[in-house]
Image (cartoon, rainbow, N blue to C red; front, top):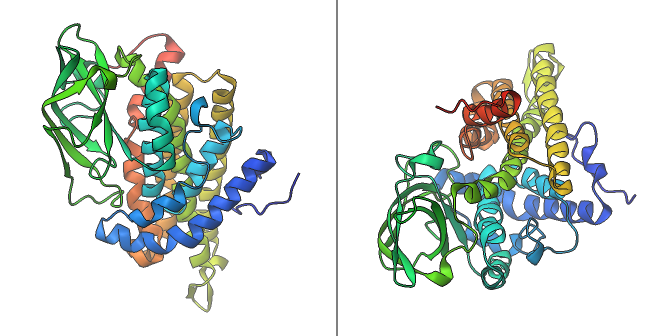
Length: 393
């Protein structure tokens, strides 16, 4: 095994289980992120702007296409993919979210539900960053009930479809080239997926302002007014909500990994701070109560890495089910929420100041806690697996 530096926050050394080429790629990503992304994120977060200058360098790393055979670079595992989400989120959760949308939701929709021709046309362009993608499922009046409550409609029209409706909280959509739109057919009532170029007449994306979480992510409200989509842009295998859910199952575990990275980002900042901040004549790292805050944080992080490693190995083996990814997402985001609060507490008043870094992770954790299925909805998916009874309504 080649000797690579590991994160001190990986207390039990899970990263060492990666293959050599995966660890080499992860370390290269870590070094790139520290050098080229970390210096930009506080200002970008403060201004609620996306640092587009990072994208060419980011797309040079093996981050995109790892779930889809057509765009794999070498043989990278789902565990490696999870570690990349963790690595980016420990720098900034918004940057990890960009990759999750581009690689998981946009590319995933095409990779899982597209025809061979659609995969060949779109996946390489998305993987290279030649074009940017977004994923439009959530609506102003439909979130957790998307399986039944989707209001955006798709009406057959000759050799294509006409879309009408609205979407909300659509990440990347203010600057994406295409958006995957999920809409309910007026013909058979089933949910279908469409590759919609943002330049299509009738498509409008408006930035959601005044957010207090994931401020770097450019979320949009989308309106669709008689947006015509040709048959060639209709996802061939997307014929029900289950096909949309298949994409979410693959990406949900990566959100859990990103939650771990968000917790680690706050934890690392808190550890560094406690070794420098002096009170009562010594650094606060000497105080028992401060050590307790840090120990509890590290326990949450370690348990979460263990769970996500197992769930991602199941994905690699083809045995992961909805309830496995849902358990990871629910548990890890809950543990993250507690951890960032403990780390904010360790910094006292400075914990709410952006310059000390913890405040950003503390705020961003709230979005990760909610998106790609709330804790409650994911718990119900696990509960259904336990009891055999669905209790969603």
